[in-house]
Image (cartoon, rainbow, N blue to C red; front, top):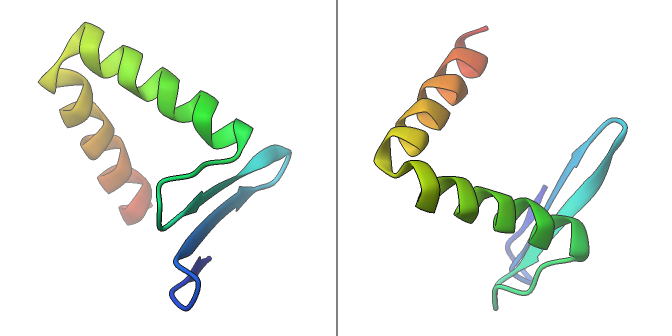
Length: 63
């Protein structure tokens, strides 16, 4: 859910901690851990990692 009035995005998924990011870039602990993992994988694998993520997102969108 994205709340444009207060500039906040909250992402939830069953059996997973919710991710919360505000308009200033502040994140809750779960979001910080996921972002840290994303950055590590991106720096390790480069552009190919991002391209694979995009392909997975497209497959999920189509399914």
